[in-house]
Length: 484
Image 1 (cartoon, rainbow, N blue to C red):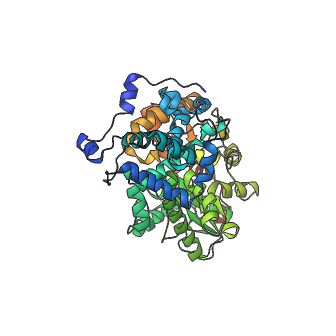
Image 2 (cartoon, rainbow, N blue to C red):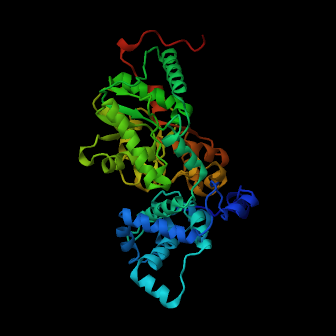
Image 3 (tube, rainbow, N blue to C red):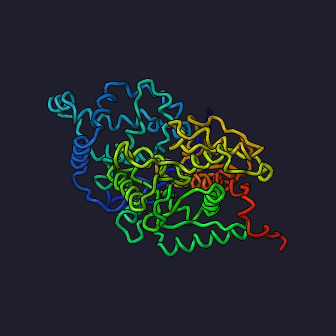
């Protein structure tokens, strides 16, 4: 993988802070993302207290004890990091970033570190070091490509996550994520986009009418149907921005006779806790699971969203009953199963343009969903081309780790974080790039616009909607003549 370094002009644009000097002075924090006002005094002490509490109540110490015995300075991870390859700055090497936190742990939470510190009277945590961590940890997109190369098995993304967790406990976290999550957990609407129930219902009724006008088929978005097989929960932003993705999913359920429902009590799968705070992550997971319990569904089905699918799949068993917890699936698993069983039919002559597929890091890096989406696409897209590298070695869109929701750092995301992805998509010459993830879609649209790449970002079920073949008995009227 070869990525050209950004120019001095691009660097200045990407790293320019949008914050006013008086805000920086008031918060004693010169980072590029907005932060809510917090207690600025005694930051080192409070950071160490938060670190100590987290170590006491979690299993992070076990991982840290392993990591401090390994070398975190060989920098082999550098060749896999799209951010470092774009900036060429040693501060962006994953090893360097991890060492910021490991050195704090080694000095303040190990017997040897504490003994040497008291003996020589040095190594105390400073405000400058906290500020460096606050900047560095949010430069990472948490794509986890560095794990492909590390010979010592150090999970740099885990350390970045832990660093963000500690910082958030003392009030340093991107305001965009904190405000959205507060609305989701404590607000009147109960979701990150503050979408009220009447607006949700109006949207779904509009989509039903749109499908009927387009396909001549009555397709319903079932609401609050108890004992359905699937509780379907997408990223709530899909109801506002991804109409064709939702229409495609509803069409698949109609064609296959699936049993599903959407809750009007809770309809947001987004879990920003994955990006900055484990306590938030757990609360969101419990809220999602409680809704599946209330409606007595057999399982939970997450829409086209990478991080929401990953958090639900891996943390529902941890926080909601272990092996007895309801199973969690991604919508692409359902669609693939229906295709495999012959219940879903797609017309191979509808989508003739060149199509490529972007692997969202949260569902591809660990090898969970890499082949099934491709098998669906190849079933009806004649001109399919792969990006390279792909699957478990895919390149991040540049908006991973929650950074896509921080609008003030868009220049960084589209100049540094997503630089390699833009080149990769450009090389395919594709008309459509499929991105089955709400965050990836937003980031890729902004990236391709800023990098001037002529390609349309689209969901997998957007394309399925174009090509789906309904049963004759479901078609109520001929498809309208477009000239009419």
